[in-house]
Each structure stands twice: as C-alpha cells, then as structure tokens.
Image (cartoon, rainbow, N blue to C red; front, side, top):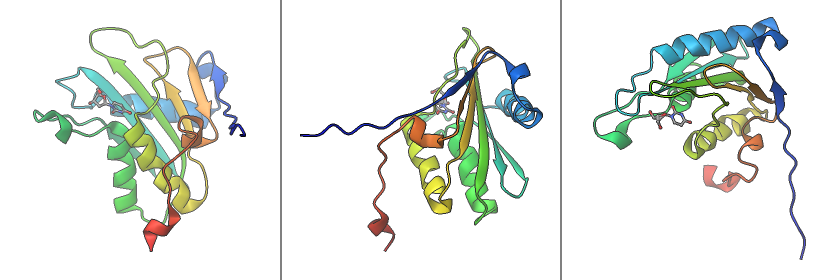
Length: 163
Ligand code: THU
C-alpha cells in the first residue's frame, strides 16, 4: 500500500492593497462583471474575468434560468467565450468574486466541480495553469498559482479520449 499525496499551496492576502496593480485591476473588473450577473433565483452573484496571454480581458458572470439547470456559472460563461472567440490563446490569470444579495460573503468562494473540470481542459490544452485569484465581497484574497489543481488535485483527464 502507498499513500498518494499532493501538495497544494494557496497564498492568502488580507486585502487588495497587498496585491500588484494588475491583480487589483482584475479583481475590480471581476466585481464589475459580478454586478451584471443574472441571478434572480439564487440571488448569488458571481463575476469572473480572464486575462488572456495576448492581453485581452474576457468577462463572465452567472446566467440563471427559470429551468434551473439551464443556467450557467460565471467561470464557464467566461472560459467558453474565450475558447469560442480566442481559440489557441492561453489564459494567464483568472479573478473570481462573489456576493449574495441576502447575506455577506466574507470568504473567497471556490468554483464548483463542473467549472473546475471545464477550466482544467484549457489548462491542459496550453500546458499551463490558470493563476486564480478569489475573493468574496471583500476581505481575504486567495491566489492559487497552481490553478485548478489547487482545488481539484485529482482531475478527470484521459488524453486518449481526444483520438
Ligand atoms: N455559481 C457560479 O457562477 N460559479 C460557481 O463556481 C458556483 C456557483 C453560480 C451558479 C448559480 O447561478 C449561483 O452561483 C448559485 O449557485
């Protein structure tokens, strides 16, 4: 028997002032995107901004639907838009923020499994992690340089499926 271990590392910052200007800007843009979320059912707003390697910024937010499962998370709205409009361009950094209309989100919110799975496909495509910045409505900020691996250490990936 052996034990398989993977180490994850997440940087924790107390506030935006500790971040570089680029990261501060990404968080500000993610908040802008969050305010445009369409979330009348959950009243939980998520904003996501991707900084592509060519400098282009792609924004996404959650889009809900009366038929609940038809809605889509902010991260997948953003990453699928990037994949559709900028194929072949890697994502360098992603910032995700969340707020609820009826209570306070004081901690960073980690993406759901379906979003992590979708994001990991793009990381694999380009052979590099998407550096991820997370924040709630304010407060502590998490930065994961390992990208989705930090939140989903064992991922579904079967290279052969591409053939
Ligand atoms: N949501 C996201 O946008 N991203 C996630 O990673 C998890 C959840 C959205 C989906 C839904 O509109 C609302 O948050 C509540 O689940």
